[in-house]
Amino acid sequence: MWNTDTVWFDISLITGITAFGQIFFGHFELHTPRWRKVLKLSLFITLISIIYMTLGRAWSLGLIGFMMVMVVIIHGFVLPAKGINGWTAEPKEKYYKFRGWDKYL
Image (cartoon, rainbow, N blue to C red; front, top):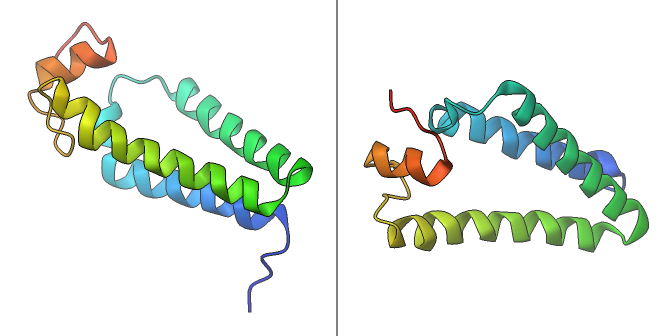
């Protein structure tokens, strides 16, 4: 079986979720610079590792769960409240304005 007693399990969860998100939803991030995506992943890995090593597994998994809940809240409530479809990010003009992007492709 898998050894889930190390920080590497938590890191694999973060990188797996990120990979899934980039594969299926990366087209919504067209105007986000690559360096920012790399920085975001690096910060999440660092944060999860520090929390795991200081507070324990329950807290690190709790943070991952909290981040997933925040994604659901943003896509299920915040975006629709602004008139943006949380699944398709349409209309694109509103989504781009929400993201702070001044150009529309």
